Image (cartoon, rainbow, N blue to C red; front, side, top):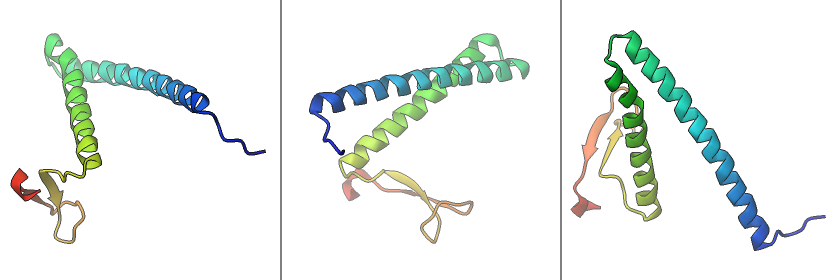
Length: 103
């Protein structure tokens, strides 16, 4: 009873999946922003700064992850990476930066 879905069915499923995941992401961002703001204000950070902390970090992380995914899809290696002597990330890692000309 295996049927191949039509392109319209696949498109509808993907759109539904994106909507659901976007809703979950918004709820997670609100939850995190509220908790970070409350934590910061409890530690005597001024309210205007406390409100901006989580959105700044979230936007930065999202941008870095998006750019890294796009560069990886294009086959471009990262400019900087953390590597240990045996090739895995760890506490005794070294910072390895290479210019674009080496890529």
